[in-house]
Length: 224
Image 1 (cartoon, rainbow, N blue to C red):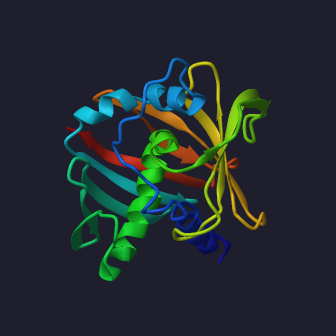
Image 2: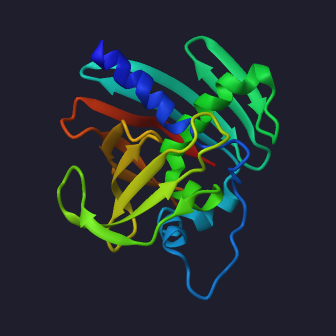
């Protein structure tokens, strides 16, 4: 039962990100001194994203030795056409400012899965409040690292008011993070590891809990 609750909780974590707040692919104004979140996004390949025509990936969740979730996505960022294949069923929708009622369930899943996939970019694309840079002990490795708190508004969206604390070192690649629920009752730390470069996008393919019993990972990644 605890394992099932963990997977249910995982899905609720990332659907907090607002459909109407995310500006996917939007250009960011050049400043004399780049913000920390801009430097993090660029370290993960943001400047190469405008060349991307299509992204494919499979979002997987494993608890213990059991694969609990597997969803295949195809996303065309320039048109925001999105296709989900889950089991034997495929569905397609276009992400617009107003999501049709019948598409909200697939939109929630896409927000959840794509935020795990490209969160460093979302730090720039979405309407998040970013704290000043601080230093502290990372939750899993216990190493001293730099960190930022990324907070979303407490109204609107699917589950508003959540915060994500991202930890990184001098190369600006994320190494760990913590999800914090809006009510302060839940926290979930995981790693950012197994990075691979896909057409200039640096993707973390694996996120693990402190004891390794939970893993969220990506397979079948193609960037065109």
